[in-house]
Length: 188
Image (cartoon, rainbow, N blue to C red; front, top):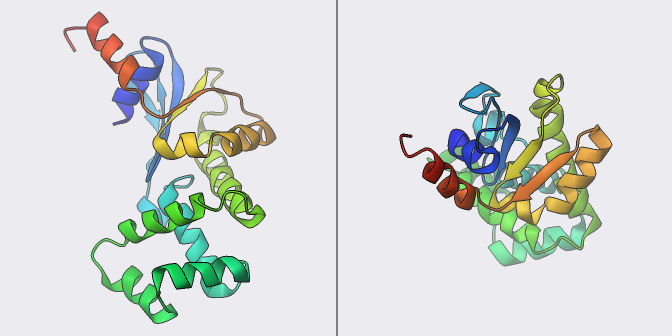
């Protein structure tokens, strides 16, 4: 929940809240409510920066021959799948998101691979260029939360700097701050 994350990370202060995990969300928090947000479109139409989109990007590269041979071979051996299996999984199953999460976990195990790092950075760059840019005129802190955000914290900071943003903090969870928020605002 975007409002819960905003309250946990900003309390009563203004800021841009981002969630980067299996999905991605962003919004402008005015200290009370989410005043503006960017609609996410799921892993097919949006969710740039998320682990699900990262998995989708890798599968696309694998199918088109852009993924490195050694990574492709290891992936196919580990998951035991063919091109036909991939298509069936994506286009015939009711929820292919779970497959993309498994693929992202595989990529997370290869973060020493230059191709994987570039894939991660391109995914995050898309998040900044398609979501965060919509808040460009707001001079408030940007804070990011999510399990995947913590895994990609270094790449997020690097891309943010390249794109002209400063990230105030990256946390795995806003829970600690959210507890504090509700202690200070028992009526909410």
